[in-house]
Image 1 (cartoon, rainbow, N blue to C red):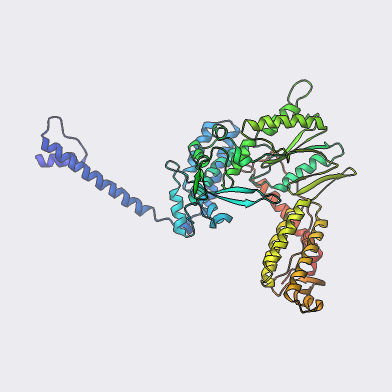
Image 2: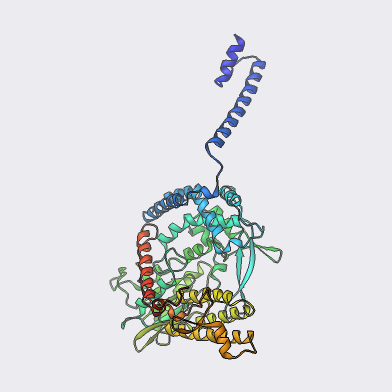
Length: 538
């Protein structure tokens, strides 16, 4: 009786009654520990049977994007309604989800910096490394490692731009946090901010400026603004107090320090360039400048705010840390400059005195690689002299680097440079610049060919490297590749962007807009002489 009764109690985890013998209590505790251990092992075994080992190639990426986008849309709607507690809860749900972690890892292992390691020298190349990287993204126990400091050259300057390269795990965690921060940033951002934002580009900023300055009654005075060391000088306290993100992890990103020449240095300010989330932090810091200017200069005579009323024609256009402000007189821009200085000082930033100037539209100004200038009341947008000089230097260095290489290798490299530059300027008045760059490149290639064959005549050199293709006598090509000429790039104006659209809620608008522009460019190329004659058909 005693043994059966004891067995029955232990099987149901019923503790012995008060006053029981000591030996019975001891047996009860031993049996309970053994059964708990057995139960735990059984649960682990059941889990391993029901959930197979994850394979990187078996992840349903389409379903992952759908799931993450659904949560991002919920964040956007919560921000629009001002429900910030709900925003925080959905952000936490997103950053702890498997699909979000998988997309963050995929972004890290598929971008240009996938072969650049951090201070630990670790790269995620195999499927096992990528899978382990997903499970390593734990927001509760995360601790960032110091950045690896490297420097890149600034065009036309002696000083170099510092970059901070995180480890693969830190990059993935930044990508994960960016998935949660981006919906908030896109909803609360300035309408006229175009840099480092989803579905926005420099061409959209150019088109917006064209609408501001192309009319006869448009403002004529422009303030060219540039923030000195924007990424390196942003106040950490301001970001931690005002950016709606996970404060604990954000502090890890900001305070991780960097290693330069085997020495560890702290980071007391700024969001180092090189991280995935740094542009989002910078945009969030500078957002609000448009609202300050509108509240100041869009107030009617009765003292009421009216966005359609702008007596002094003050308008802002910003791309990352570069911006311009328009006005109908020079005195107003000095007031605007003072407002901007006060706005930046709260964030630990200040304007660059060298690059911040006030100019007239008749004299022209450079912005994002273009020159904006009015000629007899007509606004012309052309590639800037600095941009043309930069592409010329890049082509010259490439030709010198490939002076002993095969012609085919040289053509492939040159096409990457020329097509990229022509693509960037395809929506402005760039035909003259295209012809100039094509001519300069021809001169470089002629010198390149003469150096390889110093004892051959000019006719032999021409027949060796330049062929007759589709009626074009001087076509630098081989049997496999043809050198692309910028003059064959059609000029197609980009449609102006609807600034009120949100990329998460109105994604269809942005996709259709992109497809329509792509179709217009494709049709323009088919109508060009190069396409009709089949110059690039091999």
